[in-house]
View 1 (cartoon, rainbow, N blue to C red):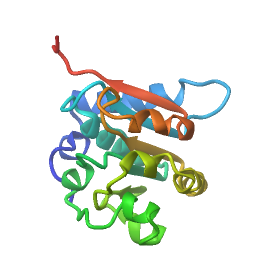
View 2 (tube, rainbow, N blue to C red):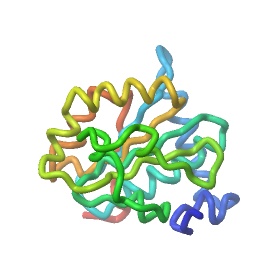
View 3 (tube, one colour):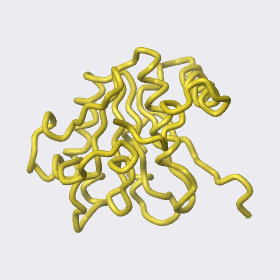
View 4 (cartoon, one colour):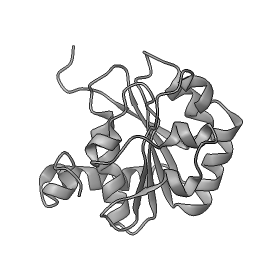
Length: 181
């Protein structure tokens, strides 16, 4: 069962949950030429709420009937497994290293239309894994299976990982902590 960190699950009628639905709608209508299928969530620094926003956005997108995949791309400080109360022993890093199959890496949730891939075992070379041809092929395969994919990435000013995913995503959301100087 999902933890209550996901307000769209714990209090779906709240104004905050409605704000996530508004965000989902704004993303859907942000491009006239093609639909937005992949979005990366990043921020300038740690602790600004990237994983919370990624999780809630994934939930409201799944609720709208879209097959949704949430991928934890933060190999250094992963959070998605904690938010969804899942094991992190097998995940994206294990998949890209060829240790497991896609079927073993994808974890279902209690929510219809929502699956997650946790970060997995911390590799010695996170940036290289995300920049690999395997990652590119993996994302292309997932685009055929899912209507919407959310990438939870590390802070953009700390490591290059978020920038490396630019080739795979249709857009970025930059999270800014409220009241931060």
